[in-house]
Image 1 (tube, helix red, strand yellow):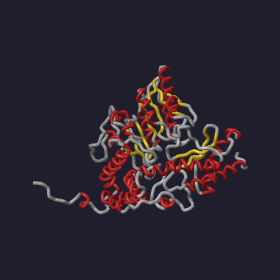
Image 2 (tube, rainbow, N blue to C red; image 1 turned 120 degrees about the vertical axis):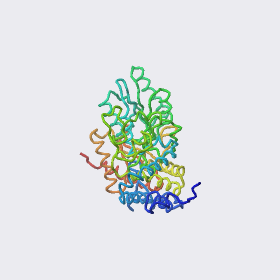
Image 3 (cartoon, rainbow, N blue to C red; image 1 turned 120 degrees about the horizontal axis):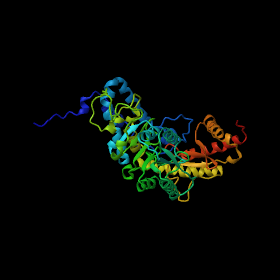
Length: 456
């Protein structure tokens, strides 16, 4: 006999159960689009005096997402074992599915981790390197990832092959620089095992021809590790079509999820290469187990790769559960991914030019205009770096950044690159051109102050 009971699973659950509570929270979210710029700022948590010109370092998230996070924290504390053992896994799957759909990956090729640096280390420490293996990276690799590569080269037979160039150069030149290093390594009788490259680099913040570099790796028979730390939420990504061997992205930088939340993507064909999470935990399967080690969690039918990352250690993982809320906010309040990106990119490009005009300098861009096809822009500062002693230069950037924070209630990253000082601005939906101009005036004042300051 057919089951005629129409009672839903949600109706059988207590009203504070996360599966019920999430829907209520999201349905209560504002559905009317908020105009970008100053009106959108009201949806965020900024101090009234703070101008947030640096989304790119640590990100930020809306009030609605904070509400979702705090409610999940409350639900967790209401019954810690009940939630974490029995409810959390299905909610984690919901978040994995949401991100997988966003970038066209299979849910079981998608796991969540705290940050991009953890993802890079997970891949680097999982691969078994042999004598003659080289890891290929360029000079603009993120500092944390560069040091992870250095560590691998200290502790394994792997060696570092550096791709050297200074922007601005064309995308074609970037690809040829990588190709040259890969082929020279092969010609020397060595094996380029892994190539690491960005979607958008950190410093300078420029778009990399990652689609062409992924294709190059396939042509050369080399594994590709795509560092998309600045990717999801800033530029359109179809990772399924791209088909890199490994990819990862922060979510808290540009997608409006709380810190720390990121995603690691590994196609089925390569999942056997990822032996352990960081830290190694319950999901690890030893090749030659010395004894039977019982698992303290309920049985699972999930794949070894997915289960490897489901519960690695005790920490506040409610940021992972906020991914659907962040995506809903972006769709219903902001009007969708394309609208967010169009506004942020345009603001970065046009705002960057205005700041450069105010400073009497230039934006870092190549002739094709491809470096700035993102929500980051880099403007040269009007300071003669060559006139400064080498030991003073790092102190100078630190002094300027701290002065900007302490005296002007904002922050921008200042860095030395290609014989000059540069500053990186982030375009974002809660900013307007006037905010960029404010930042430009601050920089002009701080540069003048610096010229009259003695730094020891």
